[in-house]
Image 1: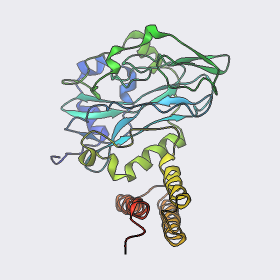
Image 2: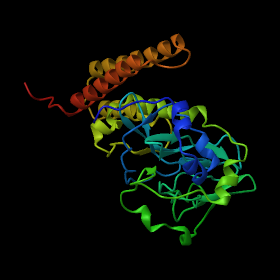
Image 3: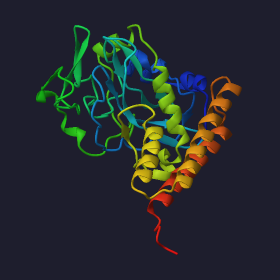
Length: 312
């Protein structure tokens, strides 16, 4: 990937042409990632939505965030909203003033402008067709959301909202070469309403995604291996599940199990210590080190499970 030029958000906001500012919603002022770059993000990958894990959780689409010098995919995930009655407006990349800037997502009583980006699963580019709040309980539209109706009963079916563009590759930004949508009066009104920032769980989810090298565009070429998950922290859970499966199948010895378990404990403690030492955040070098160790552990689990035990 060509070398990127990073520009502080303040500069990005100052250089935005007035005409472009008038075309987008007031949410465009909420550029929260902290950088603006000169290369467009990859397209939104096509993936299968995992089933809703529990009633009341809402779907937050996957998106491309930006690290030190590359885009990385933040998997779509089901999360608990801050409170009943709130809906999620996804963040989006917008091109203006010669650079791409990220407009952060937020919770609010109505869905605002998200650049016309078709994230799928009810987010077809404008509004949200995946369901609605009814008396403090969320009703899921199973025409566009993956919900196990034997477990979650508060559902309905409305196929009139299905967007054909949900199939195929989708542009991930608003601007030349991407979507050309402009905010409607309703979306501008939604942007002016009181908002709730992403929850701590959502922020942790994005941070965890930044530690996994396989999420970076330079590694996956726009096709992340894990584009979506049922819950935040599912990777750590899956890693433990892989260990358990290896033991149960006899493909990992007690010694091998103890070794990878110890490595997992070391990584978790390292992250905890580094965060405490840096005000709850990891430095760039610490992120790289944690990701390197996590990937090493994953490879060891795979190696231990697949090697031929009878080979002399």
